[in-house]
Image 1 (tube, rainbow, N blue to C red):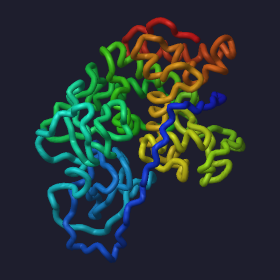
Image 2 (cartoon, one colour):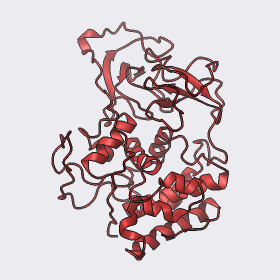
Image 3 (cartoon, rainbow, N blue to C red):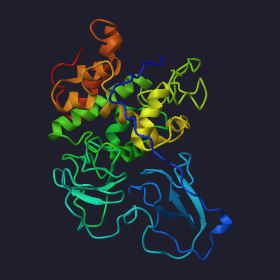
Image 4 (cartoon, rainbow, N blue to C red):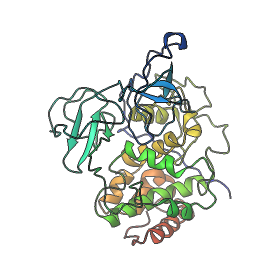
Length: 370
């Protein structure tokens, strides 16, 4: 099957904040075997820069926001602090540790209130807890995801959408995911997708169950089209120069910013914007999108939830407002496929969407084409 390819378009809404990801790293000689172990690393916990967890007998410090990235793994999110022993009963970083061992008695989020990094709040609209990853003047945790990360603590209601697809809370179960992508590359794991969802909590949790499943199906249908059924991690032809003239240049190399991941992230400016939004240095380390499943899925969700491309709205907004699947195509590749540009490619996306909503047991809705 020949790989279908498109260009991700730069949007004026691209994030421009600069994230400092450097963290002092202790050498192994500075750590002693007598150092108490931090709370054990948890794949479901959210960690921000400076927070600690123990894993395989060592303490580790998170360099930036992460969830589901194993200490010592390819993502390079964690710094090894050396051997530890025993248990300290909790993490040492940023506002109480990533596992959130305390009871859920945190203050209720209020718009306009100044919050400092590490603050934990209850967000009333969805009943979930969030931890500030950067100081902010009361930004909405479900919109300003660069400033907030979901936080899990004992006794938490968990919030989220209704009609989940199993223990993951995602409206697509692992069995349904496997049915959608029977020939997928093993790199594109279901667990990686589920871990990435916390970066954009509004995705597939907004509206009723039908809308949530329609959005999930729409995202995965476009992903299916872009990757040939989750077969391709990178574009086949990597000879293209995706190094636009920008002040920050192309530190990873002129030809390093080719298409990667479920929506084939391309160009240095998109790696920069996605990395800034996610708290991951993708400009210097674009290969993370093809070596770490969770990071790869996060870049796809970043574009889906925040970028309008050549369209007038994000793909997320298109699905939750009833604008229809056709507007997701416009946001992704509209200037090429819409308005009669390439009807065959457009129809392939529509066919994928119709097949996926059938698997999820919901109608496709209207306005399927562009």
